[in-house]
Length: 340
Image (tube, rainbow, N blue to C red):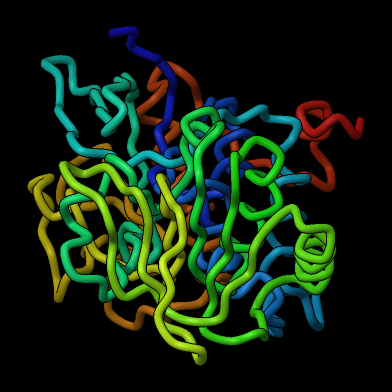
């Protein structure tokens, strides 16, 4: 197993995790980000990409996706590395005080600092109410697409009406043997452009669209052959060797609960000077943390990221003197940002 070495591992690639990359980058700290979702942005990008946000400083109104895009643009000079569709399963402290972070893909990251920016915890997919679906999970039923090639030449059934369902309908159609999209109605919660493209594929006969709900799976030993769909015209069976249900996400603390951190009502208590947890070198910022007076606002998480960075720098590079500088006047910081 190849071990990746970096200064900081950030668990969570939502807005607060992304802004932490910017603050850490100003102090020359290199970051790897791990997220269970298949894209950056956390709740903003996954749950309400088009929902307007009104309390981001200097932005009278900005959508969740626009905020994510702006944050990604802001951190480009620091070249962070993203690892999507992964969950951190283990955190081990080494003899020298550094950490080894292990994911469910059996990757190992060695770092001096761990920053938990996981919102309310890890996002986990909601299981649809289909009898016996557990037998097929991980074999022919999947809640995310990690490798598109695993869906090549398969009869794919996608269930849902949001952005994820429509995005993967468009992305997988070219490589699928057949593709059926099932949604309980003919109205969608996805970007209008994606809906238009899906409808065009349907009109061209390149995909099937079925109004209804999946009530059963046909198959054995974890391998699907088809699915039962209950619609307004009765029950039908559609061919399916792979199913992707997109029923939304639920938040759980997940493996973080086993990391030996003090917890307060399923949140992680921190101090308000460094936002460090009960374990030195592990910080928690954003909605995942707790302290007296805590406000669950994105802008609060931005503030926490800035203070966390001061302490993280001293841990990652204790030999360096931490000098506070302003981006408006420091030519050193401006060179790092590529604007000098």
